[in-house]
Length: 386
Image (cartoon, rainbow, N blue to C red; front, side):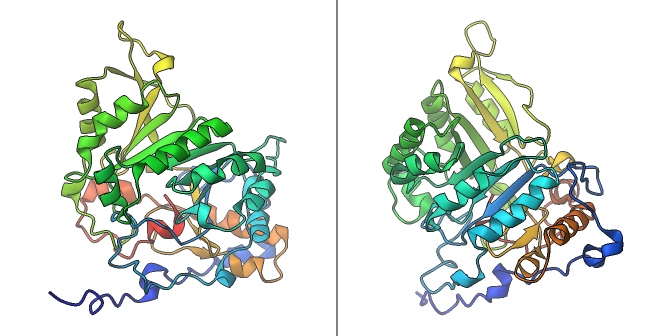
């Protein structure tokens, strides 16, 4: 058997690619874009949602995100000096909000690993939209640290939380997180979040054929009537390290059919434009949605692309702005923040970047097939969050 350390030399730039140059117009005062909630890209999509990665570190090694054979003990993470400070994140976020962002999601890696994260939450919770409304402020976590942090997160101003949970069976869960972390501790964290008032809580399950599809029904039964929203996510080709194969994708349509074989469901209307999940409600004996039983969602970015109304931008932990989850490179905003850029300069740069956006990776993959030369050096999910 070969030494596992002899074939793992992964160039750092392959996982954290160099940034794209800012659009030439982004720095021109004669073509300045002022902050406006009407900002739209090339396909008419408004900017409404900002995902902010606060760390590139995670304490799990899920093979669909941070496989252990690459993100091992020798992997070099970003130095702290490279990360955006909380004040820099807030400075940038203020300009995104002025351009129309209404929802902020903190991600990672595992965001709860970022020291003193509550300070950032306090700063973001104080921001207001141009209409004077508070932001929809939420966070996605693997739940491992949630039991001890839930109350402090709520006190700092966090409104909601999403927990990644890929199985209820302890053996399956330990195998998928690949660090032998027990599912009971995540369930304890979820209950702590509920007790703290971080709701409504969403539970995300990545479904990987041949690995955890037998957990779909147990999850649907467990969270039925819990007041939490369970969402099933198709295994996606994010990044280039997870060995993604189309035959490991279980289409969301199959997920719904499986659940309906034992738990009747009815389709529900979207709650807002750009919503990634298709909603289904648990039905009562008369075939109508019973709100007390709750709902589930399916996110089908592989089999049913939703690029046409995608309103999300992603800010990496070192200040690169990505316009698509499947992007190859981002735009360097950190250099502006740490330079002499004014608020107007930042708003102008963000405006020109978004106006030039035309990304529709999932639509292209769906139309052309997964093996047709689409970008292969996609940014890793652990770097910009899901």
